[in-house]
Image (cartoon, rainbow, N blue to C red; front, side, top):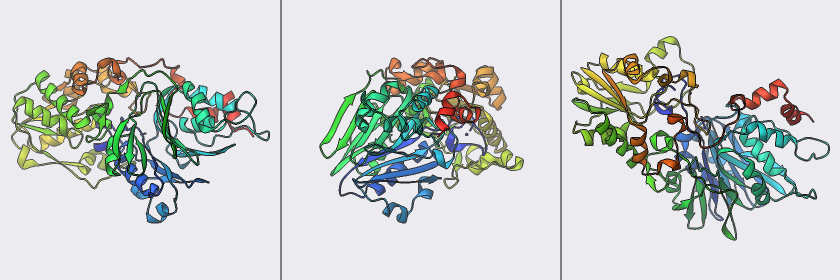
Length: 505
């Protein structure tokens, strides 16, 4: 789930703070397969969705083992750790923290013992009724006089605790499937869940379907994943999306589904703009084609006389291709990206901060010298990286720099799995487009219109969450003090009734 400015996560100045990705989840039910390795490669395909921690849980039918740590998927796992995870069901997770600190205790999958076995769960999204869920956990029946303990400080562990602790009217423990049917209607916000007990793999998606979740078929099993690209990497054929409000269960009897809420589709439009991989399909629409179409529409809406269209690699590339096609201006690679610079959270010195963008991007001076450039990017949030980029291009000899953005101005925070800057930090809130362009040092600046962006997705506008652009949220939100990323840290430190109940023996 997931720091930047106007660049999202891919090409940030070191130490910048801006919108970050949602998490990636993956699950597989496949007797006879090396499910831990399938999950590893599935998470590898989803690494762009979370880089703080990674984990895999595996069941052999009698017990669940969990291996997780801080770092990238390739840093957390090796042949030894994967070979120790033997079984036929697995759940994997790559995390960016939109609720709870980036610490080991908050890494996923989360694990809980239940009266009938155990549960491991991975979550992509962000919940908006975390405080209410904490109260529900505090009210769970006590075992041996002890309240349910919550060591983690994220919304995922609360959901896991609720699923593990449900009983019927007579106090008899419910199965995980029965508990999910009971608990999920009370969970509010964005959630694409993949979880399991010792025998069954489950997947569930919030009624709005804000984050993607898909079902795939292996020759000897089934896969669920955040994106279709993760199905491709493990050789699974796409079957369909998990529907909003649907609970899927997979075991030796096959696939069965039930509905815990009525579907009210509101898929996140930012998945098409930036979050998802370009080779992923969402709601039947290829992400790359959507981004190219955004560039075409941007060229029609915001033309300019120029010599060369260049992208900010990599996320600006498809839109730049579309802009060049529609405008007739040649497309070129004016910036070279260092592919071996990973995403770092090390705070740089002031000197390195000033030069930081060159760690990832460097201009091709011979290509851009003397040229009037159209620089296409996917978004601007704070504007710091864009400002440094424009300065760098001018120093490299660009005659003019015209910035074109394939999404509208970001004016509102996201509460559903994207960690934007605070609203006060969003550059579009305090300045006009012309003022922003001057602040960046650009000769001109233009954004695509909201309708142009939406039409490029080929998804009906009412079926998309556009809240970060227009402030129209897909559900009622609680008071602002109940929405913070560090809400549970604050509660556990501050001694609220819910927090006291969660931590006392």
